[in-house]
Length: 297
Ligand code: AMP
Image 1 (tube, rainbow, N blue to C red):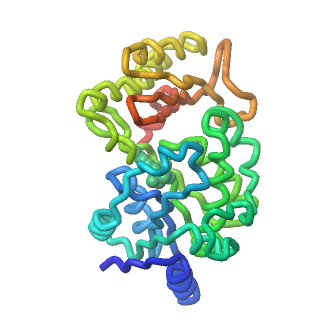
Image 2 (image 1 turned 90 degrees about the horizontal axis):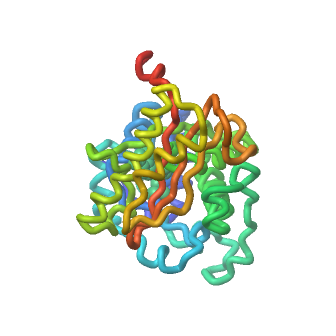
């Protein structure tokens, strides 16, 4: 049975007991409205740790649009059922003022929260298009790490830049180990996302263009194409459709992230995109590779 805690303090007590008992603890931070993508992270944590906890918190600090925050899907009861189905030990949630006691119960006094510098890899892409986003992410994730002191923490490759930011954060804190889990997709290719709940049936169909574009660029890569502009054009070709509003399509070298968007001939690349589909802002990304990884598996 999954235990449900309504406050981070209870979760912190539970976790410290586990650690004192010599157990490893896995943490899966989420904003709830859980889906099969989240469950992949939870399953991996359950496999790798003695105890697993999932946090559900729609963190206002990482939203730059009040509307997106207010309308973000929430369903804690269903979340509890889902994590129980994969043998998660604890699910916890809480209010902003519970996570940040320095607010003294006043959720409007954000100025009292020390904002965390998300580091150089927060620049560009999501960091540029969603102002303050990664400061908000780093601030809550740091607090979660301080509260739970997990052995390992689990993040999805779907939010690729976020995995870079939290890896840098964990390194600066000396813990935990960050585990990055591959993007889980529907049969259509569409990456699972809580925001998909906002799509009409027609928009959901349209949203498959994101992964189609990425896969077509990867096919081109595998066919020998190495020109950045051509690879980007492959993706854009799939996104040229009424109803899709492209925010960015970029190729980056993950090892030299700070170099910015790639141009000319490239020798290693990840393609990253952000597209508005109706009321949903969707992101996706894919490593352009030759498939050697899959063959090795
Ligand atoms: P969120 O609730 O959207 O903040 O997501 C919580 C965690 O689940 C993040 O680390 C996400 O990257 C991860 N995640 C979300 N969607 C997927 C997916 N389709 N596949 C794998 N991980 C995901």
